[in-house]
Every structure is written in structure tokens, then in C-alpha cells.
Length: 403
Image (cartoon, rainbow, N blue to C red; front, side, top):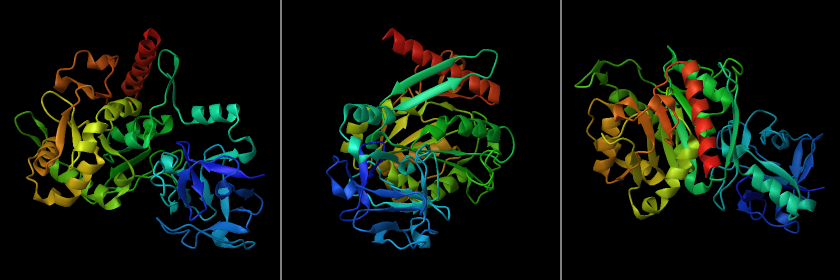
């Protein structure tokens, strides 16, 4: 019995000419046929070659095909058909960083259930092409959102949108203060797989390495940014004078480089109720404009300018920022800084007022979360956050039903 390793978005792991992503073939495509020996912990092909990584402890380590050798450490894998992770016995996982790009090489990376580049499907090659298999693959590629309220009412809402593609892929991140309410909001988002954790990849930054949730203290943690997170409040509108903090965070994001694997980079505040699948629909509309602009685009989310709770930047605009951010002036508010910097670097600003509903944008009834906005802000308690999330899901179901 052989299996095809499918990346849930149309490409498969291919061993010819190297371990990379290629269009999925039918059951006759030999270079996509893999044997799995769960007892021995090896993955190989019919020519006696196995998936091997001598760099299994290195982030970004290479993957190769080598002759199968019993009990060889570099060929020991665990695979889970439920989570989709293919994990080396020593800890790291197989990842296709550009999972929607033909020719992308497979590599080793820290295991992350919120990274779509690590979620593999195993399909018996004997049933490829059968109508039931095609239907199952299409269903698996969809985004399914199921929410159950834990407050004064219990409502289950399920909505399905097939909107994910390489052009709408999202790298999402939040900056979390190690004190106060933000860590509780981040934990509930992580446990519910919502907000940034419903993006293709998510990261939480802080100036301490902390577990995202106490349920899994040794797995997902914050990423370290070396800066003091305290800042003064001031200016005409009595806002946080936080540009120095976010300059350091953006610098760390550039150093990490994960944004390069996705079409859009999204910064979401922990107290912003954020619906990534709605954002994918928005960025899809602006993809043609992004293709035309040499320095990319970014979204203006409020009639008064770019506001910080949700910042959306294209890959080309991120590259423009990476190359020249040190030349930018630094006004005290981080959203003012980012807007002026990107404009000065030549990135195009596109009006997307459907992105953010909040009081500072004079959005009507933003607290009810029933409009079609991508994010609502602010909700600083777990109870109010969940209520907004539930109301947003319910309004989605109502609009879909009426259509």
C-alpha cells in the first residue's frame, strides 16, 4: 500500500528530482508514491530510498532521500493522520514553507499546528481520482469554523468558506504584554484556534518567553523581542507613544523571516476580535493591485488613517520595508509611523474600511460585532471577547442564509 502526501491545497510531496512540492498526479505517478512503516518509523519509496535528515535538530535543516538503513536516527519519523504532522522522533517536523508554490523544498522546522506548511494528508494511491476521494479532498481544503458559546447562551455556528490559496495566505502576529489581560485573551484565541491562530502561520511576540497556554507549557511559546514594553501615554489624542517598541518588533519579524513564506503579513492586537477568513476575501480583491505595484500595497483601515489594531501589509511592501526601514522618520505612534514609512518607501495605500470597526473610526454599533468587518476593537475581557466572536459568527450565518 502506498500513499500520496498532499498539502491540503493542491500540491504534493514529490521525490523526483528532489523532495519538493509538485502538482499532485494520479495513482500512476510513481514519484509521489510513499511507503509508510509505522513500526520502523520510516517513510520510503519502492527503490529502497527513505526520507532522511542529518540536520533533524536544525531549524531549516535539509531533507534528502538516502538508502533505507534500519534504526538510523536520521530516518526515524512519527506521523499522525489526525493532526497532519510528520515529526522526527527528536522533535522537529517536516514543513513545506511555500506549500502553494511548485518546486518549494521540504525542510525541518519546529512543530506548529498553526502552520499550514506542516499539515499533511495521507491518501491511499489506489483511490486517487475516485469521486469520493476528490470530494473528501475538496472538503479538507475548506475552512471550517465551529463556535460554541460558553456564556449565558449556547449556540453552535458552522460556516464553510473555500477561500484559502497561496495568494491569500496570511502570516499573523500579535505583541503580548507579559502582564495584564492580554495573555488571557491570547490563550483563549489559541485554544479556540481563532484570531491569528486561524491564519496559515501565527506568532506571538513578547519580551519574555512564555507559554501561550498552561495546557501545553512545553510546546507553543512566545517569541522573544529584546525591548522594554513599557511606554508613555501622551500626544493630542492621549495615545500610547509606542513607536520605539514596534520598531524593535518589526525588526525581529524581519530577522525571523517567516513573513516571506506568505502573501500578506497581519499585525492584530490581542484585544481585536479578528476573522481571518474575512480578510482573505478582502486581500483577494486587492491582489491585482498588489501585482501591479513594485513596492506592494498596504491597507488603510480607517477614514482617519491607518489604525494599529489590525495592520495588513503585502509581501512586496514588507520587502520594501526590510530594505529601507532605517531611513524612515519615527513619529511617536506606531500606526502613524508604519503608515508614513510605507508611503515614503513607495508602497501604495489602498482604502479598506471594511477591515476595522472601532470607536476611534466612528464605526456604528461596533460593540455588537454584527457588521461584515474583518476585526472589531477593543474587547479587553475574555467574556466580552467571546461574546463578540459569537455574534460575529451568528451574523455570518444570517448573511449567508439570506443570500
